[in-house]
Picture 1 (cartoon, rainbow, N blue to C red):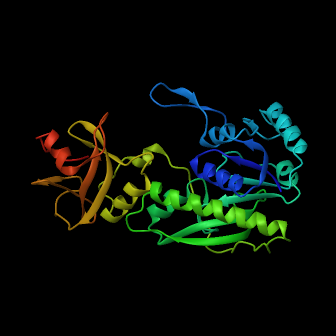
Picture 2: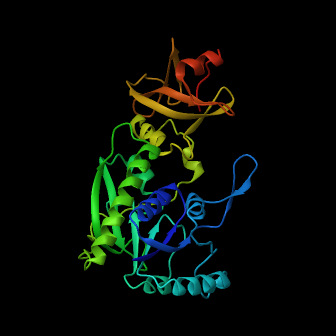
Picture 3: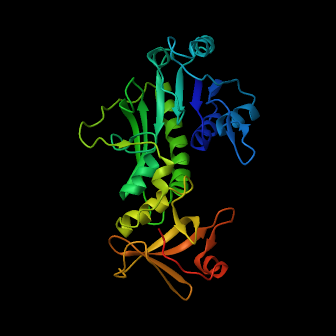
Length: 313
């Protein structure tokens, strides 16, 4: 089968690697344009583009795909390249652009999406983050036949994955990326042998995983400790939960639930090598932190670096 692939981050690169290892022919890869990154803010290719170039694959980076939109020239060039590729299917994973109808209709078997949730729960941009934040006990991968809606297409394959009590977005992402790569290969192999019966998504249980905003990372100590602890894990590695301490913005990477202290939310209590902060309901023991320009350290090393002990905020 001849497969076009559209994706951008590491989650998608894992799937592309799996497709190539399975022997699928990938004549064309689409990825987001290079973005400034790092301290020098130099343009950096996406993980998908880096993999594609290393494997000698053709790469397109249109800024838009609407033929009547601002980037119509990019869209027309992409349409010509996709049409010339004579595609059986397109696989889409965390691409970052909405596919218009002309793209969906072009491959003979349509477009398959690798979505990191058990649809219809957590449609949208940040399903892994939001599942952890909400305290879900499980998530998974859905291979979906794409339509024009936002993650509303019929389901082809679904596999569940437990969310562990200590999972961060980073650890859960890595397991789901591997699972997604395996499932999309299974879906395409089944398509080559007659296909999979599509199942409409349930009408009940729809929720939306809105894109993570950096402003969400600021810890509100008036929230329940359990919610703050989940957000700490959900925002690891990006954007990193943070709070003010000793006149600095400190990132919190790991915390544990603790009994309530009876103090005003945000009050820090230091006892030996322990740092406990009162929350709106309960308290948190802070376990791994990072000062600006520093590295992640355990609470003992963090406290040893600064003798003063003001309240958090």
